[in-house]
Length: 279
Ligand code: SAM
Image (cartoon, rainbow, N blue to C red):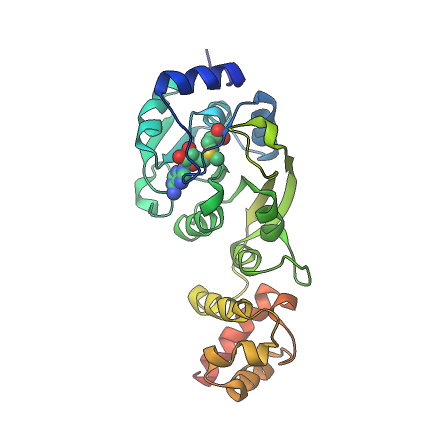
């Protein structure tokens, strides 16, 4: 029989038995609401032949939901004590526990290869974790992640929005992202002082064949001084404001525009024009 989902009493007992004292540093807020787990698994729209990658299984709340939905689950947990305890809570044979830092994992450690990222992410490293895994694991076809609501808004923002910025553009390089709901603080132990949001994403072809690193360098430069026009903001990157203007014109982007109004495709066009001009 499948292991039952964990409610508040089970989480409390499990934490006491394992001597777990949640730390802020590792973003340890554990889900203790079976309805939220069922909701996450449903919204993730997993297929039975999917291979799920979960970052930060913690006490196993979401892992228990995932093992019932897919053919294999990889769970990457940085906290060695939690990683060691996980097989005692989630007894499924199709679970592989990886005691590791998700920011450093490479694709070769996962067999079978992950197809979906589904995670209640540690909030302090959520964006770098998502970007690292999309870069490192081309087999990921999409995912559903829970992050701080404010970060969910940034990840799913489009050009022109006040919260559109580096995370929005970089995620758009890899995937189409959409908001998939809000989650209240009360479903976690300990209770965080922020709301959480779900972000669903589907991998797409990169918008350009200009190398990703070159495009991301333009994005970083444009948003480092987001109030400035691109002519000014990209001066340091291009080797002077006149060179920045010439690259922008060649890319078909107004030198007076600001980074917050550009699509990822336009950032790629700027990087491509710079390469052609040898900037
Ligand atoms: N999935 C569990 C749940 O929903 O109850 C726990 C989620 S908790 C928000 C984040 C988890 O990520 C913690 O278990 C924490 O130890 C782990 N973690 C933090 N930083 C990590 C990293 N760099 N790599 C892997 N796991 C990490």
